[in-house]
Image (cartoon, rainbow, N blue to C red; front, side):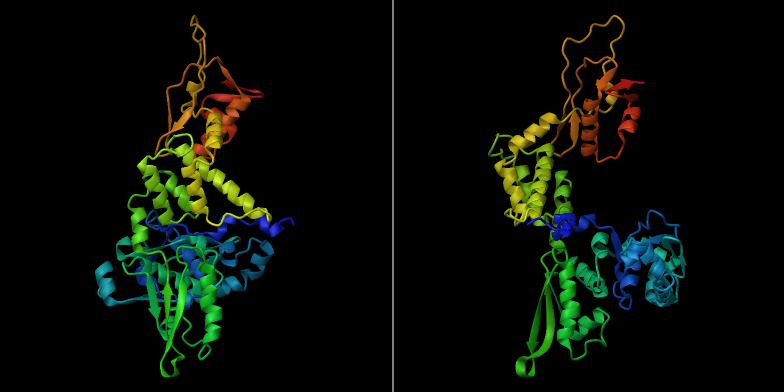
Length: 450
């Protein structure tokens, strides 16, 4: 049976979205966590987009553009236009009803003002063709720049996927607690939890509805992320059936975030592991093996940046192919699979083959082409320059040997060099621009000096 169109379009890595908090871009002021319990789903989305901007980098900026599709979860122009006069107007009106009260002590400490202040956080909202234009209150802008007030970091990519307004509120509850030293569990009475989630007057006497429409929905949206949790319903009281409290247990905490964040750059490939969903604990396992300099069980070599990066690419290819092939045995744990492959040297020969195919990384590329001066003898033999990665994954280039070509290079050789440059330097540049940058131009089957 062939995989469905939905399966083919699905990203197999999406099942594990446990991106480490060192990559998070949303900074939520702790003093504002909990003040937005009345915001509905679309309002929460807009609010999160505002928090995702780097406010310290632009201290004078008050106006921000938020694309409509971030709010509607749709790029269909008809959907956006249909909602423009209804949903977007409602969102703006609801947001402008919200007020944040900054008490006297807060104002005196952080603004040197003696009186409490009530602010409208978004005093002006305009409807443009493709986006909201939102103006921030000046006090709110200052709060967003004051990192010393204490901020909790969030993952904008995950926040954009939420379909429940309760997920936003529960997300910040957990993230705030994950930065505390004893954050392995949270316990609330049912009324406390409803208050935190902004549904105090709902589901009265209907706990099964609350469980199905709130707890289970949020748990599903958090699955395989840094805020994933299990929960336990504690009963007691007369007859032993009354709900006393709800305990949330999650596996990621302050120590785990800090342990990796303290030295996250020991090896450049650690960030790559985190980005594909390898947990912090497993990254430490990879790090420990690489730091021990134990030889590979095949080939006798040691881990270097190219070896690890190539193994990650191969493992991802295999993982994806097995997910799409309904008859193939699935890879149950990507971290264990990759670790075993790295240590055992499963792909050693393939890695070395790919290494041999790596064309020169030749910055500046002018050194690629040895121009023979008048009267100078042609070099007897040319040596291919190859970029060798160091243990940190940074590519280092040995001094180039003279090349036979006087003023040109075969186009196919240039293409391979260009591809390698893009892969290693994570830069986007066209072939023509790449050649021009180095003083050459593409001329059919050759790349020639201008």
